[in-house]
Length: 327
Image 1 (cartoon, rainbow, N blue to C red):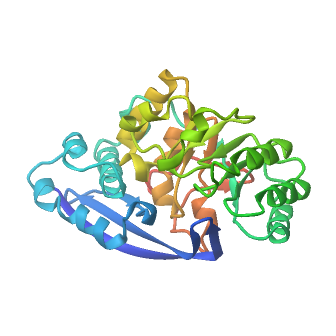
Image 2: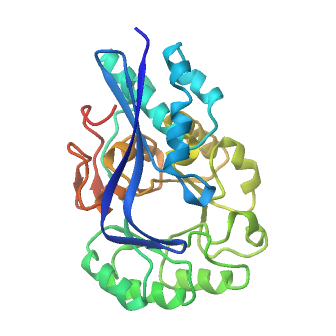
């Protein structure tokens, strides 16, 4: 029986607000693709990147454009050639994986030839704000093993110092979201090093990151906006020590697994991240997280309410999904 496609745009309120260098949001707007063989259904969820000129309408339309091809037999392998990397392909790719798992009665990790996934430590994000507000937020979660601190504005040395004082025992990583410049890069990296930060994500705009070639890096620097899929890797040489793999950038789990393997071959460290989303979007990333040094899969924790049957979080751990959710 031909596969049927359905596409839904969903809005999930965030608990409070979520602020990075590019702005503040109060809800997660996601696109869900569902594939059905008439008996079983496979789902995938994605989040458009405004940073890359994407919105929910254009992403939903891109998914819709495959309806006839899917009815005609397009499979996960063909999808990789038909759609570019990005959120639309991510939702469909993950839906194909989920459907195959439900059709065969096997988990996705088995189909992919991977070891059974285990719980992993995930970061919890501290939104960008004043040093005082960020310290207050950090103090409330100082017991967590790993905190991700959003920076990317004037006064960042004071912010990271305040967070460190409030959470003296937590491992800290920093995400500047392209908010620094070649002029303040050395000062901000030094402040992070002084605070014991172990990794800094995307300090410079992706189109202006050449300063990383010549500056001594006191701590590892991780590419985020500068890396999408395997085609992005050659341009990172000499600039970055690690990459942040997000399925909305790679265009799904299929490319994410291939990207992780190639990054390891190039001796790049691996971080796994996600957008602010429900557990349906985050679940596939838990498989890539098995080979990552740093995991940042706290998106569902930032919501006022996750979808039913969502991922299990206990302390700093996130557990692999149950089959009913995904995979």
